Each structure stands twice: as C-alpha cells, then as structure tokens.
Length: 64
Image (cartoon, rainbow, N blue to C red; front, side, top):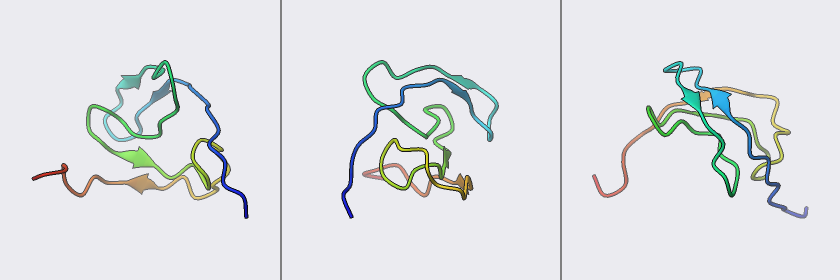
C-alpha cells in the first residue's frame, strides 16, 4: 500500500468548540488550534477518505 500526503488546505468549523478554523496556508489539518479536538477524516494524511468522522479528544500537550 502506497502512502501519499495530499494537501487539501481548507477552512472548517470545529464541531467541538464551534470556532472557525482558517486555512493553514501551506498544508492541511484536521485539528482545531483552539480546543485541540480533531476529526478522523483521513486514511493517509490529507486524503479525506476515512468514513468514521469521529471526534478525537486531545489526550495531553507534549511535554506536560
């Protein structure tokens, strides 16, 4: 199975906190920079092919 990184730079509304998350400007992301929740949307980074779309809660901040 070949893994590719697909860049889909799009804005979205966080389903957890409701804030508008702007485009990143150079890559893609599926996490909210405000509350750190994420959405399970990728099989491989950026492909948006995952059907789950479940909420991923942050576990910890690195180094804490």
